[in-house]
Length: 429
Image 1 (spheres, rainbow, N blue to C red):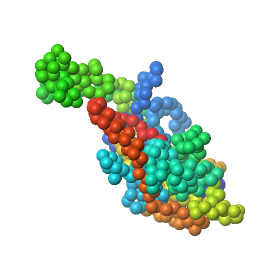
Image 2: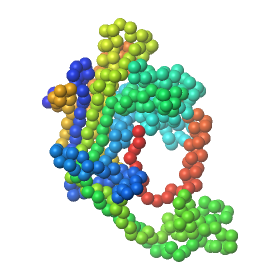
Image 3: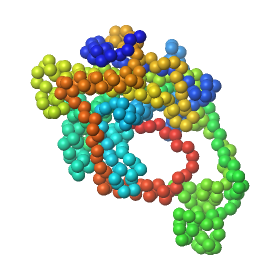
């Protein structure tokens, strides 16, 4: 098996290849006997589970499957892997981010980049921030991104090339629903094969044996605190203590202040699933990259000459493909700890293949160092054609109104209380 080189990658994009594909078989880290916990969704009427289950044909046999990590969640994980590599200075590419480090009470947010925002560079988080004191979308960078489209992809390549790999729809910008759409070039998901429904139990024993018949009240001097003495709480005017939405059923009970027992329960709608194995499938579409056109250099010069434009476009697409392959490799190296009780491990090395339009498949090898070097070489080759990546971050500052609603949201969340239970949701795109 040969190691993938820049020439190989360039030739794949210039030739008859249609995709790079990686298929990896995974197992629960606890062993084949263990079960995993998929992401949960709103249960539709008549459904018996909160999981996304369906029958699929696997190796010629119909199997019950369950979605363990969606396309959107996988994209988020790959973006996280790229951001980590950027922070470690393993990879260099353009990055737009909002810097909260000098914003009072929000310093803990540090920076939030287009790789973390749900709608990437088109997200409202960036839209409602400032670049050099100007609303981002009114800045030269913001205007260029707004004007980008698949047949004029240079601005997006210059400021947020990852959006050209993972896709973005500029639905929150000045053009609203008419904003440019860039399709996903990378599609990845993890599916559990041979899934069977399971159950889980929950309970809590209070070591102090506090009984539910005891009542607690709001402290008149501090309504966010509780008191046990009814007279101290106002006597006949005492108010039973509640915290958070949906807590009225526990008003005045020790459960409202996280004391007391929780009776044992069995959950059959989200009780995890035993699986035969999991299958991680990644496809990087080369036709999707070929649809991207680059009519200008990143400096704004027109690519008028046909041959020069063809060479520049091929170089840019090659750099984007290299970035996509790096995302696959870096995510694989980070492992598959999807969520609580969903740790998967590989059953062999990652298999990366080039798929031709006639169905022919050629395996190629690529490791972390090789992927990093491929990005560097491809970016340098594109820069030689006038399509340059500046890895200096474009730092925005949150507009005062954005900072205000974040602070107010935090106050509201604090007033409603933390609540209890296990958060388990699939990451969005």
